[in-house]
Image 1 (cartoon, rainbow, N blue to C red):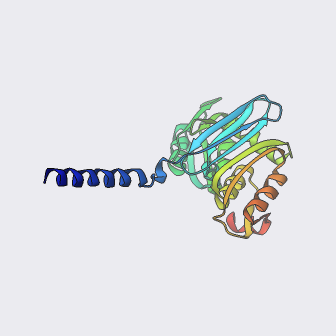
Image 2: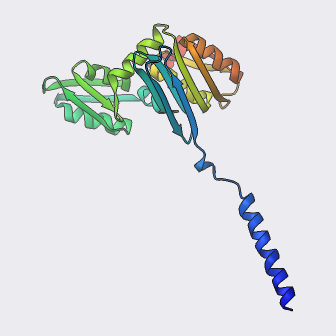
Image 3: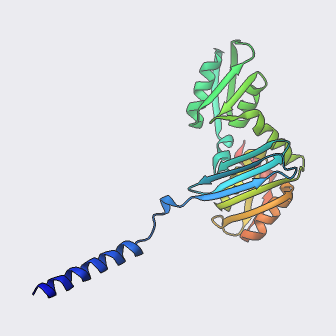
Length: 228
């Protein structure tokens, strides 16, 4: 009887061990890592994110690493109307709208009037940046403006995108550049995994389209629909 009990316990132990060893790992613990280095070697960036990542390495010390979807917030429609408002009031309203921490150090603490109706958050932050120093989610907005300028000017950069739905990638790039980018063919949930060196924005979009089997275009009619 003792031998039988020992055999049974041994079998239970082995079965339990097999169950533990074969239990699938939760996707919540799977992080995608991205890294890139600027073409001039002046900087590099890396990040680990649970739902995909995107990095731009431009040069002259400007490298950017974000989790996918971060840049989408800049396309947030913003409606604010103030008479003789203060900057703290405006910043608090923008933080509420964006869901992100925003700080602003004005050059002069003037009162102002604001009348924004469905304006893009980027445009409102851009206005503020002309009157002082803006940070959003701990990011210096002036650096983000330099990234937009580099992408729009055809500057060659390095790019890394990991485990990101192409729809999220396109929304990020549209919000970051201000261009009316959209997907007109293929599967929006196709996953982007790509690492590119010394490429322009046009080349980036072409490479991502090729990898994901989608068609990404700049559609001015789409812009008029999104921003009436």
